[in-house]
Each structure stands twice: as structure tokens, then as C-alpha cells.
Length: 101
Image (cartoon, rainbow, N blue to C red; front, side):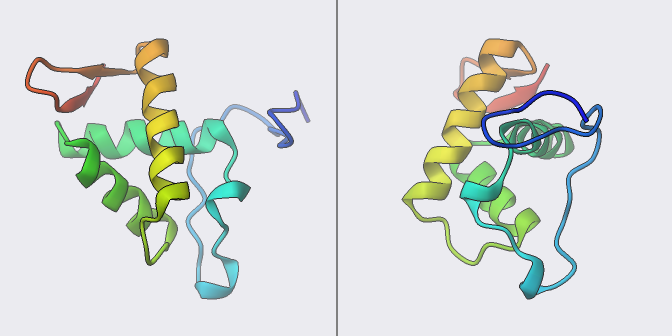
């Protein structure tokens, strides 16, 4: 076990995103470790080649099994996008769309 990530513990390098098997295992956005959300955002963007922010929120919702994109989810995805832009793992093109670096 390694460092505490804002209330979450990482067991090793984050290379996968945990997708729920059924509705009973769906975690809330508040239960998502920041590095897992960032990994999902970068990989979904990479898969799409380029993506608009609104479409990315929808893709994150589908990935994690969330039925709505409320303000909490939108804010979490935007916070993740901002972290990824600062880290250089995402780039915002002049047209406003995101792409993986």
C-alpha cells in the first residue's frame, strides 16, 4: 500500500479503471479516487481522439454506470480535466476540444 490520496489509498500504479459489474457495485462520484477519475478522463479522450467537454461527461457517466450527469459529476469531471491539463496528459486544442497528449 502506498500514499493516501485525499482519503483513498493506492495499492500500486493505477493502470486500470474499475468498472462496476452491476448496479449494486456502482460507486458515487464522491467515492472515486482522483487518480482513477483522471485515468478514465484521459483514456476516454484517447479513445475518442478528440472530445468536447459535455460529451466527455456523458462518456464518464456511462463508464461508471451513472444514470445522470448532475452538478457533482460535472464538477468532478471538470476538476479532473483541469488536473490533466496542468499535468500535460490532456491538451485543449484551439477549437476547444480535448485530446490526449
